[in-house]
Length: 129
Image (cartoon, rainbow, N blue to C red; front, side):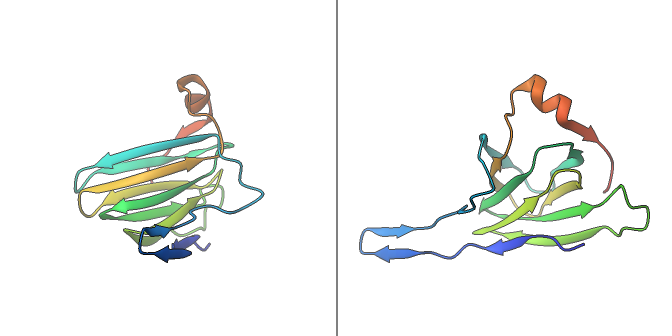
């Protein structure tokens, strides 16, 4: 299993600043955007989503992103270190977790609504780290 982990490049810059597209995919429909702020050493996740997938864009700090295919008993826990200006993709059905290595801010761009009832119905808690 390979983690989809990308460094975001500036597409255009001039004396006013720059433009950086985060997502430009026809298949990925955005339904929710969440801003997450975490102190150093925080563990988040340890779950998977039945239907939701999402991108996590690091705007400040860095974190370790862990992923495991829990449907496959032989799958290994894989990880990537995500730095400021990088994104990682969390697909539906794959367990994931993060550990912040610094105070970290993340923008989570999700494919489904995160209204409490819908979010909780889609979430399955599992401990992978």
